[in-house]
Image (cartoon, rainbow over all chains, first blue to last red; front, side, top):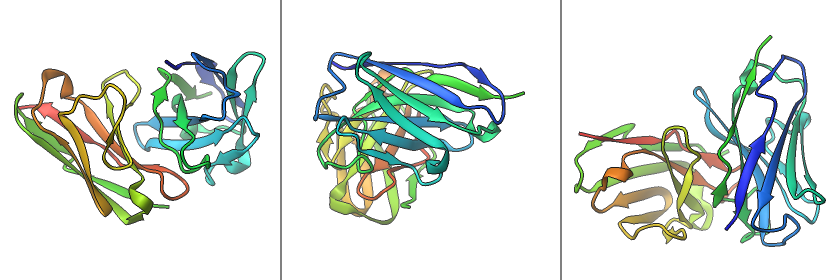
Length: 125
Length: 108
């Protein structure tokens, strides 16, 4: 059974870079069976897909975030990481990492079968 | 991107009653690639249904999904106390994947 656990700064200032890490246990992130994704949830915007990554190196990003976003894998630590530059108050949200079964061989055509508990990120000066 | 509209916003029912939740898409969802999630306060969403009608592992059979094209339904045949929660639909047939705004099922 997969377990995912997010970690991050909690509070970050506008214009800074947000870095979040998701530690995966129960399977290797190098498996072909899953994509690894990030989703965020805010009171005003609801649930929103941020992006996904596969061990093959394929990444898929939400077009609205693509210019500021990087998602990558650290295979030595079995972690999935997110980096979002130039944050604003609009990036305040709970950030979830999640696994997506690799049914459609596309990181932007995914649903999410296991989720981390979420990490609250507040952007404020 | 595909916009998903869920209705009603809130459903007030009693334990034992049947719940019917609707999810309407702004355009057809390819191959019925639609999922449903349950979320309780302070928790992450939990996958209930994928592929419009496939139950996820460990999900009780009182949860069922149906629909195709632009209209999808989640049915809870007999509400148990633990079923009172928020429910979201999500399409993954078109990029980017998108979520609906949610339906709250509350105790009447």
